[in-house]
Image (tube, rainbow, N blue to C red):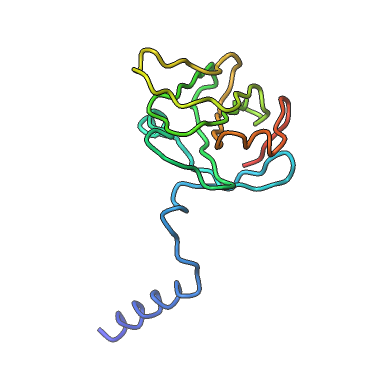
Length: 148
């Protein structure tokens, strides 16, 4: 019994020096922009997350974004139905090069059937969403490469 308590105490103490994870850290990775600036992005990998994306969110923190992973590369258009803030959308190919950019896509405040689709004209594997205006602030351009 004493041995079990010692093992348990050691395990608890081993984690004391580490920074506690916050909810904001879950499902996020660092992404380095072409200018060397690093931002934190939520990863959207499963179908439920891919469909929900930024819906119903009222803001996006500075230096944060959302990165969508599509299993096969393809032509993926996005829309702004039930998205409450303007977004910049950046499509990346399998080499993580920017192949398409839509800047300041406005929220769609009509019925879903009337919301326009954006992008999807180039083959991509990833789509990066940033708050509206951030692509310009970071100087993002076609052909540049991001790292993650």
